[in-house]
Length: 253
Image (cartoon, rainbow, N blue to C red; front, side, top):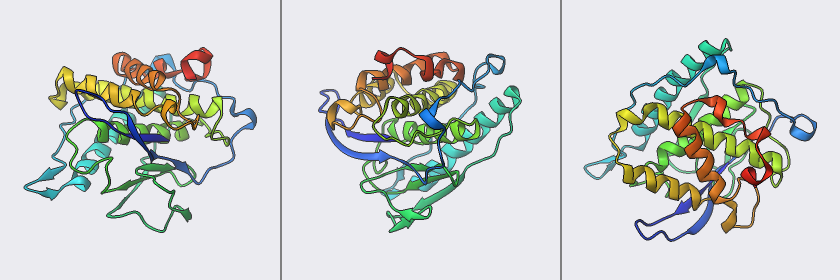
């Protein structure tokens, strides 16, 4: 799960709307959500691949579906190659696109105020094609959100269970690991994105502005930790760097 910050640059106003990413349709999680880090060192880094962004809008016409389809194709390619190196079975997620939020999805009610999310039990990425998380954006945030949700799919395939208690240390470790995995992917395709250092700095600040500091719900970690794990993954380009489960408590607060 992630939250959508409304951020203006360069002066950053951290006015937040609870939103963006929920993992729903939960399978049973192990008691205490005890998890061993699933990423073997032998698998190394995520392969460097090319993933040029397509336009989110063109000539005033929204192209959000095309944008997300391109991103998901890149994510499938990158993580399939990693799973092959790790000797693990890979399966693509189901992906559903909605022009507008629906009444029901994945066998339950559409989460209130949710943008993109991952249905754990059904291994399904859900992407609304409208909303402030993606419409008319020119920054890297939509790419980061898609990569974060895909990170939950990677966790699901590798047996990392979603903790039942939303406000718990285990839940924060789970969500911060997905932030780190998003950073790993972003780092692996960075060379093909044509983005400036300012774009990357803005994304880090957006991650910092989407922390638990601002809404009182302790589910994702403080902004400083969301930014820390995103950057850790981007710089390492290695899923092995995303072991939030053995990290000090202060790094997952």
